[in-house]
Length: 382
Image (cartoon, rainbow, N blue to C red):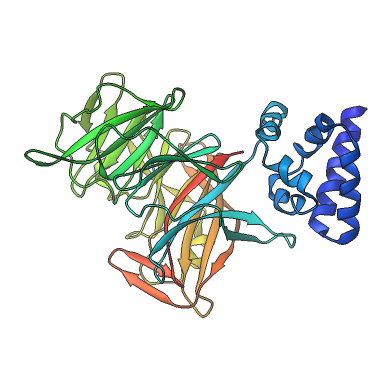
């Protein structure tokens, strides 16, 4: 009975917040007369997209929505959500800033700048772990972003300076691969950060036992406890338990890039074939995600642009520029289904523009809409 009442209150609060009028603010402020633990319990059940509006009610509520206690309670109640963060490079200011995808009162989704976060490094690598984003860069060093409070926290200095890094997480450890300058020139190196202890593991430097070229432009993906990456010529797989690198000739059949994984299957947008492709490392085979003709029609340019793709609550989220009069960045959400015979089918759940610019700028290998270039997208749990 009590839980039913709390759930009803939450629904009322959420609807009042979405209405965002003076009367709803007055009613919400009455909650301050309740014990703090009851208020936290109620707010924890409110969708996080309503927190910015809720924080406007009073300083008390502003403090509550930013408190670690609230997010601990959300986790205990199973009310955590996956939120999408996107790094956009502004070609006017030459800055790279962090945006969050938020649902507005009207139901539309929009990319909103997070003003409290500084400009992000252009050549850095980014890894989402729980409610944090870890950032690694030669110039800026290593730091993490607490996505509950949108604040930056420093990490211990990287054991060696690394440039143009790629990184991903396996069993609570972030593996960072990049270029390090040695006495005999630039060499590939790897360092490992333990996210539980927040310390770098020894040895400080691990040289891959295989020749790796430039990996920064292609990124990396983790599947079944292994890290997959590539350079301009070959695809590679790293096995951390055996500390072993190998070439993957089957994966190398496609020029994959900007990929992500869902249920240990790699997905990427094939710009040449204009399709969403999937690679299953267990079956060692490539396939095409069927049923996405409506999505392909939305990408109305002769050559597909750089499409950012991220795993999001078991689904795929795609960020891409769409040419035309409106000059818009769009986002599409795709659910996946494995059918009999091993075929993968996708369902376009929604697709809409999330940011509007003024003009188009073309770079080698990249296309920006307005004055933005989408560089990286991440799913964070809060």
